[in-house]
Length: 233
Image (cartoon, rainbow, N blue to C red; front, side, top):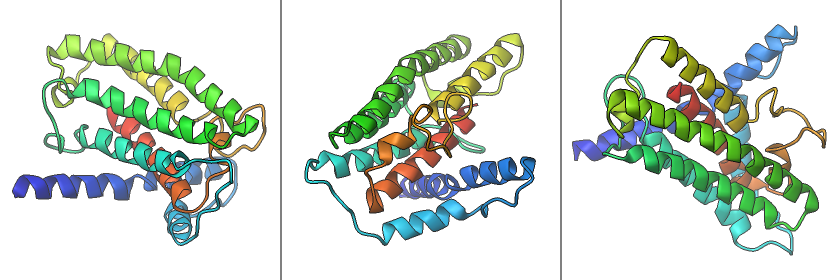
C-alpha cells in the first residue's frame, strides 16, 4: 500500500512540476531580451484552458489523431517514473529499466509523429519527417550515453547508473546529453519553440491541427519530456 502511495505521489510531482520549467525558461529569455514576458505559470493557464475546450477534427483523420497524443503522454509519464527525482530511488525501478526508458521515449515520438501524419497534411508530414530525422541522431546519442553510464556503474538500472560522478568523462557525457536535450526538446539552435517560420518549424508544425485536450496532452508531454532530460543531466 505504501509503495502504491509513493508511486502516486512521485507521479503527481512529475506532472505538477513539468509545466513550471518551460515557464521559467520563457521568463528568463524575456528578461535577457529586455521584455516583461509571460507569467511563469502561463503554461498551467494554457493547459487548463485547453482541457475545457472541445476537439475540432478534420474529416480525414482517424482515431489515432486523438489517441496518439494520449499514448505519447502516458509513455512519457512512464519514462518519468523510471528516473529518480530528489533523494531516494525512482518510483518504479528494476534491472534493465534503462532499455524500457529508451523505448518509452521512442514510443512517445512515434505516436506524436504518427498523429501528425494522420492528418494527411503535407505541412505536418514535413514536420514529422524532420522530427524523426533528428531522432535518428538523438536516440543514438542517448543509447551511447546510457551504455557509457552502464559501463561505468556496472549496472543497467537507471537509479544506479545515474549516481553522481566526476571527471573528464562525466563532463563530456554531460555536454553530450545537454546537446540531446536541446535537440529533443526543440530548443535553439536545433529548433525554436516560439517560431512559426516554415523553414525552422519541427515540433510546432506537427501539432497545428490538434486542439482541445489532445493539444493539452502534447504540450504537457513536451514539458514533461524537458523535465525528464533536465533530471537526466
